[in-house]
Length: 112
Image 1: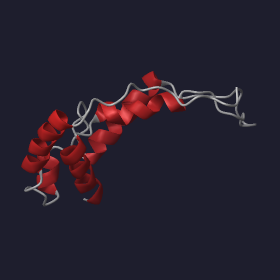
Image 2: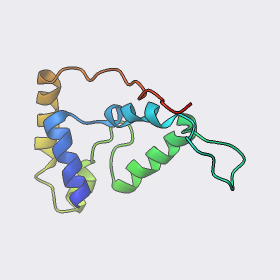
Image 3: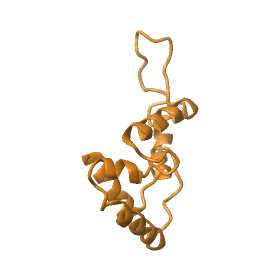
Image 4: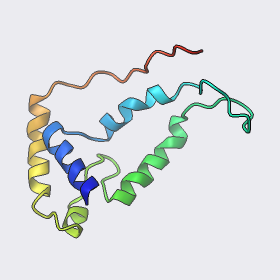
C-alpha cells in the first residue's frame, strides 16, 4: 500500500512514468568494474533482457505496464479509491508546468 501511494504521489506531482524510470538504465549498461571469480566475464545490463523484468515488476505492483502508473483497480483494492482521480489530474497539470526531462545519458565511466 505504501509503495502504491508513494508512486501515486510522484505521478501526481511530477508526472513520473516509465520513461523517467528508464532514464537511469544507461548508467547500468557499463561492464562491471571487477569480474566475479565465479563468472566467465564482466557483465553490464542488457536492456532487452531487462525490459521483461520491469514489466513483471509493474505487473506485480498492480501498475500499468506502459505508463508505470498505479491502476484504478489496484488503488481501489488497497482502499485508496480517492487517490486515482487526483493522481491523473495532477499528472496532467505537472506535464504542463514541468520542463521536459533531460535526455538519458550514462554517467561517465572512470574505470574502463
